[in-house]
Length: 318
Image 1 (cartoon, rainbow, N blue to C red):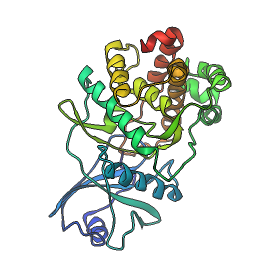
Image 2: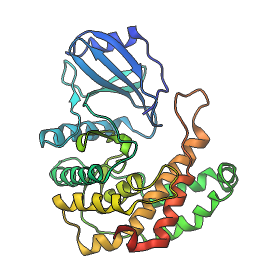
Image 3: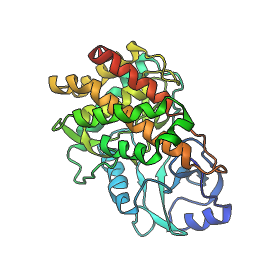
Image 4: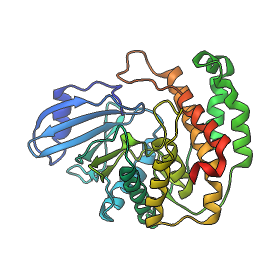
């Protein structure tokens, strides 16, 4: 989440007039993340999240994303439902950009996850995968390993080296990941971005999984690998906590056991997850406007994770 576009109180009040959510009392921009502009709104009827879609999201994909939230919410998954406007529309256009109003869910994102929290997140992810298997929508991912390798190629060796001298080493590593990528693993709709800041918790309970705007049809084991890379390391990617990883996978398998083929693929899937975040962070580092209310993230944090998975293989998930 971030704030690229600035809306004032009058703009927001005018927008909310199209919804049955009461009168605007207060609002504030949300600074975390990198892709969209977000605000926390408080009205006479409660709290809501307003998202304006700025980057990496096509308006034509919004019915898939927002319909998925409603589908999962109806299946009792801990996800926010979409607030439809008075005409039943899931999103509206403001100054040529799509905006959606989303249910506010209680909870805080864990900054230092515990084993109990990791287990709960794994279980919530397994629940989501099962519930999403009968969602009628489909969406092809635009962030497959080949796609993210192309992003890095487009950044260019010199620009990557300007971020960190070791970063261009990802190019030949990425080519090997693409060549060895597994096909035909069991699939569903996957979140594919389940970082701690996309999970809300009260104690050890998951109260919300949010920010589904990278969701796509994909391998469920890949989604678990993404979550492992996001949850089981320190912020720099230098240290992995095996107890967190074991708890995460145990929680997941309590709802959906992995096949032998999926478990064998986890080390490479995790490397592909790291490749993706290296690419997106490098691109954001180079393209984020200086005046945007957003913090650029170091792609080397995931370069170190990738090297961990390369060095440890299956033992990284033991």
